[in-house]
Image (cartoon, rainbow, N blue to C red; front, side):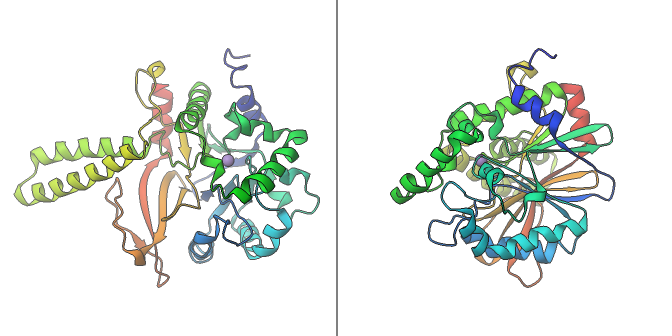
Length: 359
Ligand SMILES: [Mn+2]
């Protein structure tokens, strides 16, 4: 037994019980989490991006032969009964199942949809697992929702006896009070502690964990603020050796990125996962797909052969200036008005090399 086995016993269990999937050069996988699908009404947080999600699944990921993983909190069972969700959004269930023909469709449960385990007639029951393990050569990527690492209220939701009471409370008491997005209302310190616990576990096991739950996208364990810091540093170096015309463009980019960084600080999104244990080096062991109910769009992770990417889909018509840390150009999806931008990408071989060298 490893020394950390008690501290991370939930995570040890997830790793050993995970459903195995073997990746190869031709693997293409889309990972989404936190759809929080509701009843289609005013309190349904999924509603605003439903058309965007349907379009990108039907017109991009399905024809591009991607397999699909929905990484937890797909149905919002704290607020709505399954029957209502399933009848309102049944076309999405059909669409999810279509991904089986591209390879596979798996769905992990999160704290908001753990009650699916008690449902007798659930259309996606055969796809439901607690965790998945992707074998990439000799390496392992573990996919799970993430709430399993928490030591607060939500953990009780995995206990069947308590969950009904908790769900009753949330559905009938909290909802009428109009509290939105109860799921991420807990403070950033708790969110950070959860990420930190998964980070430590992944580094010790030398695996990559892919989670959801916090609604905060992470790529190589880096938050957006970390990215921006690194990018600004890179640009400052480039500036010193660039010629006049290039310098002007670099200067402009730096001003924009600094503005974006200020925004992160204002929103309190500054906590990265660097820790003293690893000499303040960031180990690229935790990725988070972000969420599907964002006000301005959807973040997602893609694995294509040996490449992993964090992407962002949004309504291009809004013409919002979106800054990609890698200065990639947005790709328009036909005439749909929707666009995709790669926020960051790296090779899995590089990710695992760093993990083994630094952790
Ligand atoms: Mn969750």
